[in-house]
Length: 280
Ligand SMILES: C[S@@+](CC[C@H](N)C(=O)[O-])C[C@H]1O[C@@H](n2cnc3c(N)ncnc32)[C@H](O)[C@@H]1O
Image (cartoon, rainbow, N blue to C red; front, side, top):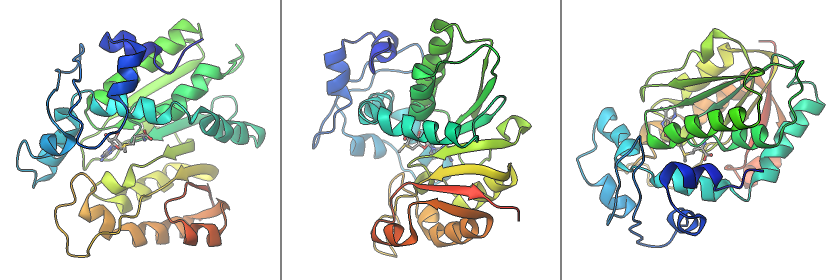
């Protein structure tokens, strides 16, 4: 059985107690983040200090932030999702019961970070030998993505399902779109990512053209209540915020809303939505 911290502690050589502390939010915290084979240690800095290490005006320097923070988001995302496993599994249950995930399906986690959804699924799934499943994991170059690669490969190796599960890791440049291994997608999860991408419109155009009718898209897009003319919004990009309405117009044209209702979305725009690709 894998605990939430099993691979995290192995990768960073820390105790479970330390892992929990490193991933738990607190005002003004300056965690002593360990290094790993893929990142340098980072210490004595708040998230704001890391952001201010250099002027971040162009796309490359903004996206360097994901590397400059070392293992910060690795610990944070693991702790954040440790109590959400039932939620992750409820999506997979629904998708399997409705025949969306079946033999040879292709599931993507976009802007996956430590890949919480696919990790939970692979941890608990009883994968039969007559089934093949394909997963594409997409993120920019950063250590949370490095950790996802390590953890997912370990899980399929330790569970002895390497022959039945294909993992395709696609590292994209910030303003680049993935090819999804040139294989149509049956399911795509995009959780708390779109507010960070330079163009959510380009992202949804790419996703919709890589899905056949019936495929399912599960997403949220955090709406920040910032002043219209506020320029420096950190790694929540202004260009993303400016395209939010257009993004949802495209989504409504090419997908049917499955869950929740339009009224529920109006009362909570940040809620996670399930969409199904139509035949347009
Ligand atoms: C708030 S985190 C969410 C991570 C993960 N989806 C989760 O739920 O824990 C945002 C993620 O988006 C990734 N990201 C930012 N810009 C991206 C881009 N242009 N393309 C793909 N991923 C991106 C970040 O590296 C980070 O992993």
